[in-house]
Length: 299
Image 1 (cartoon, rainbow, N blue to C red):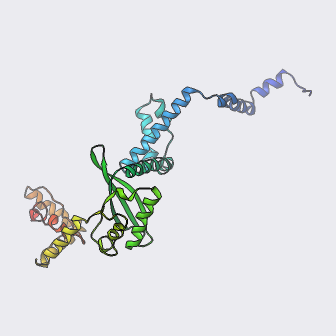
Image 2: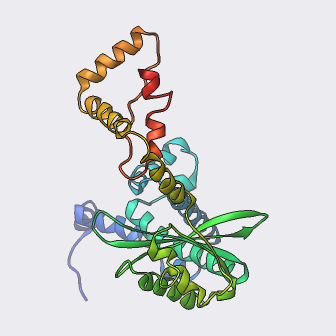
Image 3: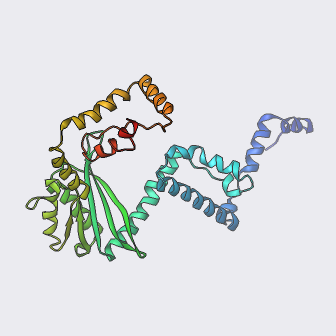
């Protein structure tokens, strides 16, 4: 191959934008040998970076912090620790954080929990509820003894086809069968006092007894106390409950009335107290709303 040209042509090409750009790209391209023979220092640093990212994701999940925090947290770490090579190398945001939590951390923690349940006696605590999207979900928590203390671990949140006792029982049975957890290790069952859960014939606890005859069944003490209180309050005048609701309704949506109430409290040298709203489903909330520290105190 014959090339016509001279030194001036070569020098002009050397300073051209196209040549400079391609030269820089070629200089940054790693050689094939560097890919075949890993650098021990780089491998060690890469493991430390991965470990740091997993620790950050675990912290977010453990403390129930928003995943959007990961969009700014790595940059904050870089600003706080400017001399840290690991901090400078953190490249993680909310999407990667979600993937690490869901696909890496969660399966490992779940497997650790299943291994514990295979070798220890445990109890199951469940509760069924309907979320804002009208989907029925079953929350399952396991309680057992480990490291000289009682621990509660979240086993799962399962979407239900229906809220019948048979459907809930099938979910529990499927989890234990799939995970190969021995039924003999299940010693207690806890749930609310609804007939679906505590029914003596077709309730979840009755169905569980077909698999674990000696299981201990414990209802919700708060629910029982609520039912007792509800019956007891029927002997009281209804004006007390209505009075607490009227007081809240009078102040709740009026900034003018709240400011006037605050002025009266300041004038009387009293600390301002918030007017509480009584719950629609729990009679025990009336005691908190009508306690000396709130409504009576303000009066």
